[in-house]
Image 1 (cartoon, rainbow, N blue to C red):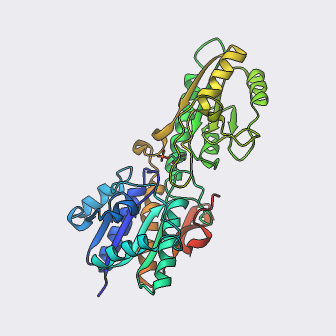
Image 2: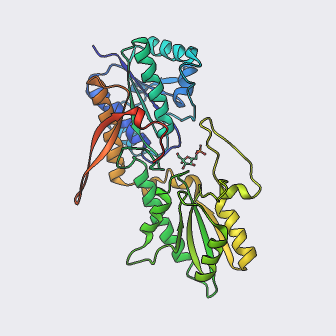
Length: 358
Ligand code: F6P
């Protein structure tokens, strides 16, 4: 007697966000869901009635397995901020009307802290109007900046890519008999987790990166140039989100085109290029800038098996919790053992997770 299920993907893609989609689909089907719909381009697409019946697309276990291992967002994505309920009830009425037309009882949204804002608002609205629809968040982001959870699915694979890529860049940087500097720009917005993962390059086969700059600390250009001068030939990891004392991002110090998304996030790109020009012009050292950009998000050749499994599991756990009556929650990972590594899933109130950057 279950109603139907709908699931969407939101925010930047990862190499395992489809594993979570597969986890939602399979668990919902195994537990007796009738139809499982997929929103195309998240909540934005749903508002335009863009959705697919996933059962028509995913027919066999092999389809599920293929989806589980396919990078990027199969359903497409969006960066769309729902209005405050008090400002615009029409949007909510429209969404709930569409959900009613589709006979939806369970709504799942796979995303980061911005996307959890959607779950928060929809579950709040459901409470307000006495709707029975259950709303659950499924965590994902390479930025790893979601509160409460031990880590986010997507981060592990991106971190693995960063660590391996840094090793390769370091090897490449050793070949000449004159000093060179390579500055590598890594995603993560205002959180340094992924940039910090460049430290994993260090091991018995590699001396590691020489300097790492995280967005959580004010970036001082003069101090940076001093350090580069001291160590001469080097590989440096910088976060895309490093900021100078007055609050401006480093990339904003040079000519750039500004693009701001619905959540007010500026597109961050160009810090490494800016710094490479500085090092070249002020220190006269041959310098390269490498902006890893989207390469680090969906690097399927580097996907971590643990990440695939955990991403699948959080999707499944969200379905289980919703089918048991939970709503307004996000599935989180809780580490229960370091050696051997082991995480379990729990659920947590979305109000303590949405819009918060860890
Ligand atoms: O998904 C998070 C993230 O990867 C950030 O690290 C990055 O700043 C941002 O997405 C880029 O987003 P977009 O794909 O919208 O340019």
